[in-house]
Image 1: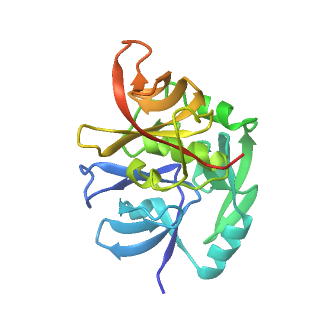
Image 2: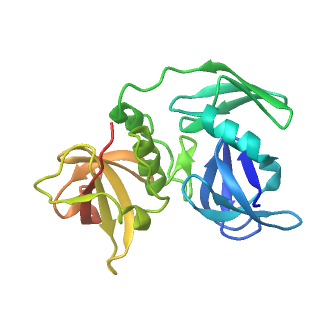
Amino acid sequence: MSKTLFCRVACSPVRSEAKDSSEMVSQVLFGELVTLVQKTEKWILIKSLEDGYEGFADPKQYIEITETEKDSWLALRKRYFSFIILKTSRGLLTLPPGCFSAPAFSLQQQHYEITERQKEFPDWKAFANSFLNTSYLWGGRSHYGIDCSGFTQQVMRFRCTELPRDASQQVLHGNPVTFEQRAAGDIAFFHNANTKITHVGILVENDKIIHASGFVKEDTFTQEGIICSETKQLTHFLNSIKNFKGR
């Protein structure tokens, strides 16, 4: 039986290779579960139970849990869309929105308890806007740094819709809509010169899109693609628009 690991840090880097200098391809957030695929002296190869993403991580950032603990955690946990502060055996831990937690719980004789949390966002637009000016970070999935597909994945989770990790995977889901049918909440995908999907963002209005490019920002959305609000130049070429049901 495969081993299940619990992420016990706010954001655990997931790398393409088993070394610190390797690129970060994603992150696992606190409370998310992964399967142990392979273990070396200093690294573990993991597969996320949340979105199926694989990569190498630091084993010190995880604890192994039993099947009973896994089942109990899945039944107990809630994804908090607000900053929360956890009291742990190692001191206080601040979690960004999007992490799983519970008011109080114990795993492997380690106790956790929420001591403070901000009010949750009233709707998905408010949650999306909370990322404004967050730095672009390749592989990032939180307010500490995020990439374009990590941003859409997190916002869509607020809307009770699960998406894969990468834009090239996300584009395979949802219902196609024409440019004329577009509406706030739709997701727009963009391609490069080779028609490869390389970027994604969320429409906040018919002619406005919020996306992560350098930092999370709002730009103008047109039938050709994204027009940068600062330079007035076309920066991303529109490929398709998808509609996803959610709150």
